[in-house]
Image (cartoon, rainbow, N blue to C red):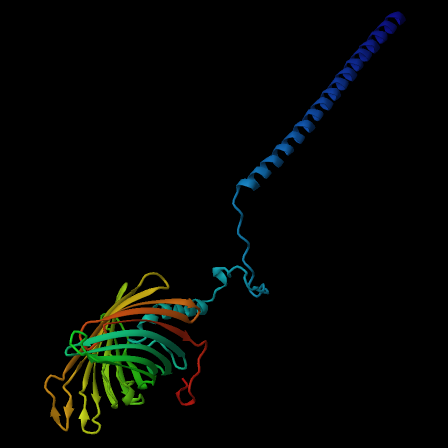
Length: 379
């Protein structure tokens, strides 16, 4: 009995030792398996992180640059130095955009300065012109006239829709006259004269502005003084044939835009005041033309300008055959050189005997920066 009990106990203990040994072996193998899996996991993790880094690098190279975040309201503005890039569109205020639009429109309309009002109260522009003209008239006698004309014109905005224009001409005239070279024993004389011409001034008022089918309507008053030297022919105007008399007149100008072309025309009446019993005849000046912009800066225009001059009267009696018709066709190009500075070359041909055969010249215009309002015309 005792031996049986020892056998059973020994057997039971052996079973326990066998089971324990198997458990230890299983745990060890499991721990070993766990260690191998963790190493593989760490290796795979490192390879994955390396792939992610490469992907981020490729995406940064291929993707477009993201826009800079907008500056918060109230933040300090970065000072713009000369030559720096222009401000972004978001930083331009509506007032600045409106001002830029007005300046661009004024620049395009510069070629219309003789037809419509472009100057606000206090705005001032100077124009310097120089031209050369040649004219020949021949019958029994032959007359050749060559002249170099310069002029200074000032335009000033007196008030809203009211403008004043002052013109001061200066001329050099060379006159050759005599019998025709085809006539035997012909003689010729030459005279050179230089000096101040007739000073003129005008007031222009914009009665109506262009709207829908209605055109711009500009009314004007003008006057011309006999400041030129009559004895030297400096009072001879190739357009109006003013010969040393006061002139006063009025008229109307119409301007209509049919994009991209601008049409304009004017008609007036100028009375020539009698002096020493001589009245060279009243005048009916007229003009018609068109112009358009080639681009956002350069404009071209064509103008037919002329005047019908009534018969000359001497002591109240009309001289038969003294009526004249003056007409010329002009081609003009207007372009800006710099801010507020414009260049305008022109060329013209005479269409009637009384007009110059041809003339060519150039004008330089400069609009002063800012406004200079008169005290009694302040708006």
